[in-house]
Amino acid sequence: MDLIVLIGSGAVGKMTVGQELMKITDYRLFHNHMMIEPVIEIFGRFDGAVIKKLREDIFDAFLKTAYGGMIFTYMWAFDMQSDWDYIKSVADKFEATGGTVYYVELVADREVRIERNKTENRLRNKASKRDIVVSEDRMLREETKYRLVSNEGEIPFKNYMRIDNTNLEPEEVALMIKEHFGLPGPSVTELLNRVKLEIVRDDEIEQLHQMQVESFMPLYEKYGDAGSPALETVETIRIRASQPNRYYFFIVKDGARVGAINIGNRCSAEDDTVFFIGPLFVLPRYQNRGLGYAAIQKAFAMFPGVKVWRLDTILQEPGNCHLYEKCGFVRTGEESVVNDRMTLIDYELKR
Image (cartoon, rainbow, N blue to C red; front, side, top):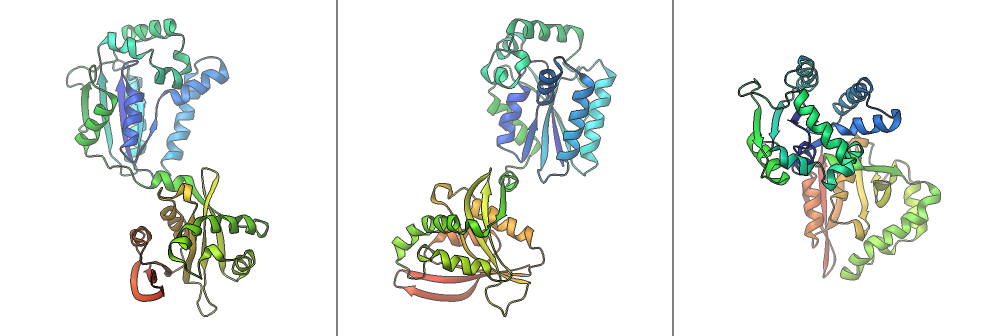
């Protein structure tokens, strides 16, 4: 896993640049004050030992995730050996995974930083900065007590860049960093982390039925398919859910039920290594957000022993076909004409 260390004096824009960089990469932001502020709030004062311990716990847990990397902000005192040692200890964690560590130093004129110290974004995320008089005096004290800007050639790392962002917008700086190091763009990791499958209980079948009708009704009105899931009764769904080796799951995103997926054996002749997906649906208000893709990936992970996955979909719905092909399904060549407006095509994925 990679690590980007954003370095710079107080109010130089480390957090804000990190926020923008997170939007265009597969990296998550861990800015320094995410640990500082809770500790001050709980203990009533700054406690470096507690903050360091919490940071270590975050690093260790994050290294177990599927993200491409982390963006970490730090005000590095270059005249303090302890800071050099600390950054090395953090870098070692990420390099031990085979990742790359990138160092980005931001510098800006003092007058600009004083103004940035008052910005809404900074004050919203950093409660300890909200007393502007105190935070400004503390910022000036820090840069006279410590050397917070590196000397020319002092930072020896291969993957290092220095940016004077005095007159640059955070979005510009983030793009400069991404392009300079060739960082990967966003992936589906974020979405997959926020989506999960929850088994549908017997007493939730009626809610499942209502969601299914709402989701499939627009397709029924478009194609007039007599076999549409929009026309299924509660009892039909209840019978399907009770079949051996067949499962209904709600698709849940951020705690909200956004759709459902039914997977398992379609007939008694199939064994546990052959599963069928269907129906799969997402409520209209949540469609076109990648949730169907996430649900299928979750199903794959949940049943790793399945060797063959099958499904069918409407040929005249290119969005559906694209979704399944993106997941790795290929057309088998089997087609079933439902009426003069609609044809069902079969897909299969072998793992």
